[in-house]
Image (cartoon, rainbow, N blue to C red):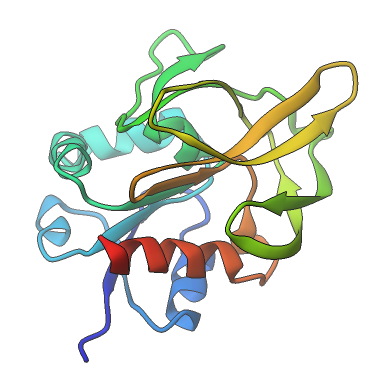
Amino acid sequence: MTPLRVGVLALQGDVREHLSALTACGVDARAVRRPAELADLDGIVLPGGESTAIDKLANAVQLREPLIAALHNGLPAYGSCAGMILLANEVLDGTADQRTFGGLDITVRRNAFGRQVDSFESEVELAGIPGRMHAVFIRAPWVERVGDGVEVVGEVQVPRAGTKVIAVRQGAMLATSFHPEVTGDLRVHRRFVELVRGA
């Protein structure tokens, strides 16, 4: 059986870590830097990094519009941290020129947990993934609003802010506020591969 082909948007951010995790999940993982590299993908990962930088670089290499079209035509996608921001239909506290690729009917708050110095680690539970997971949050967003077709997959308790949504799924799209690619835990990537296979 031919392995699934899953791309990682390779313009900025945790590209190597996602490629390594996907390879460990048994898929044909490929770096995506040009529009032609979208053509035969079964799914794509949008990595953690800096959301505005990734968007500007995607525009510069003429990848932005083809990627938006692919996402809106049903290409399965997983976004971690900045990737969650880029998949969201709406962003709060963004920069003046903040843009997203869209596809997930959510509103996210950029840098919701604070600046780099406020980065933290926590144990979380995710629907559809057995056991607790060690999660690394680095200048992470959280989800302020979920649309009708969006499933809340994970939440975390935030001091003085209450319960915040940190993982969502809409069809074959998955997004997390945290970075599973930096912990060596493959469960989120395996879950995404299942969604790609099901699509």
